[in-house]
Length: 237
Ligand SMILES: Nc1nc2c(ncn2[C@@H]2O[C@H](COP(=O)(O)OP(=O)(O)O)[C@@H](O)[C@H]2O)c(=O)[nH]1
Ligand SMILES: [Mg+2]
Image 1 (cartoon, rainbow, N blue to C red):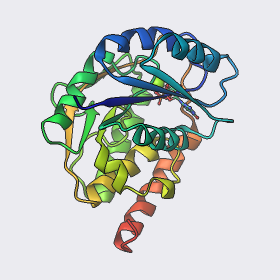
Image 2: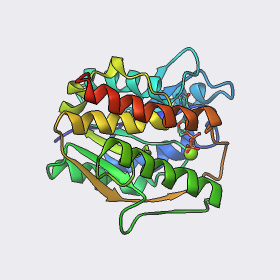
Image 3: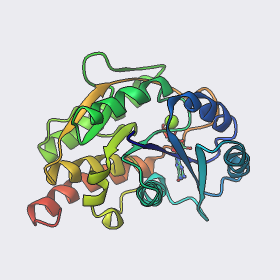
């Protein structure tokens, strides 16, 4: 049986972590929580859950450095543990745990990278204000145009990689931390010739805890996209 590991980054998700682990329990996956020393004690709850459940493990990091470095550390760990499929997922229920099997199935059927996509038929967002919808759709449009790729949802963080994709990407060269990390990983996979498919998902706003999105994260994406394009033109990625 192919083995799937869900990398679940957490920063102050004490209200969400246990319900999320419970929701993932029936799916026959391994869950790797990557906690950046959350001040609200999420890491302690994760430790308890790992002690109680063999399918859960925890990677503790010293400080919050953004989603990108947390995922890179998680990817290395998942590969070392022998995962065939490695997933990214938020811990705030914006990504529906029930969609996990569809993402894994897309890779099982031959895709190298399956993206949960809000911007293909059947996908969408609920509970989002106009401001956030605009930032997200404009961001995907901007990245798509500058990078010259056909992917509709470049900034989403619900993804499933076949092992060989993460083995091929130079993970330690990735500097992006926020949405840019999602754009960069998908772009690098495309540049390496891997096949990418979009699986429709509906993204709903979190009900517990608070978003860590910031102006800096949006700005990083705006500047990283042309930098990625130049790196590709120079043959560096
Ligand atoms: N380990 C770690 N997790 C993070 C960090 N920033 C955000 N997260 C987690 O990444 C997921 C998505 O973050 P969120 O704040 O909901 O971003 P949004 O959905 O774009 O508003 C959640 O599970 C967060 O707890 C970080 O710096 N380190
Ligand atoms: Mg969120």
